[in-house]
Image 1 (cartoon, helix red, strand yellow):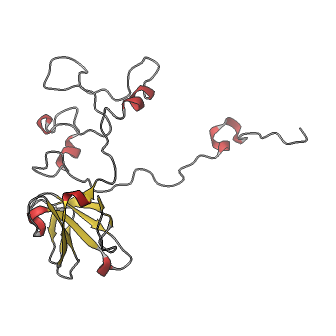
Image 2 (cartoon, helix red, strand yellow):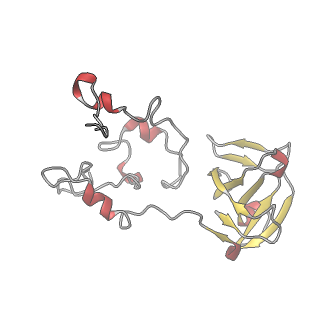
Image 3 (cartoon, helix red, strand yellow):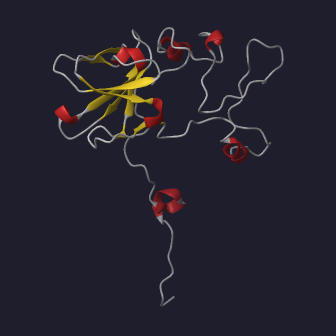
Length: 195
């Protein structure tokens, strides 16, 4: 979230820290070099402000934060209450309609997208197309096509509105040298001026 404020130390970009399982809503954090200069952002009455307002909270040594369990007990002083007009999304959401052009590029030789799922609640085969930015509906439960192990990691009563814990997608070298891409270990030959 991007916060606009007359005090420079309260303005800036606040990144999502996690979903509060007790008070609801998402807690955001603007990190800084020192812990004393960090600022929390949370919506409405959960932060001690009125409805439609956002609270900017200073950190405290008495704060308890467990992102995995969704527990955010913020005991710092309230720096300010700001209106919704001072808070805007810093990034656009990832909707399927906006990314339709990517789906066209992902078609294989037969003209079918790589990821085709079936909605188990309907009789038609392959009638549900899951985009990478979409989540499987709660009603599907741990049954196929949902992975039961992944279903266990979803926060209870979250309605698929949560910030997942980070995990490693890839490790090691992220770029293949050309000699590994071509057979014989020769790589790509670049013609010199003499040739």
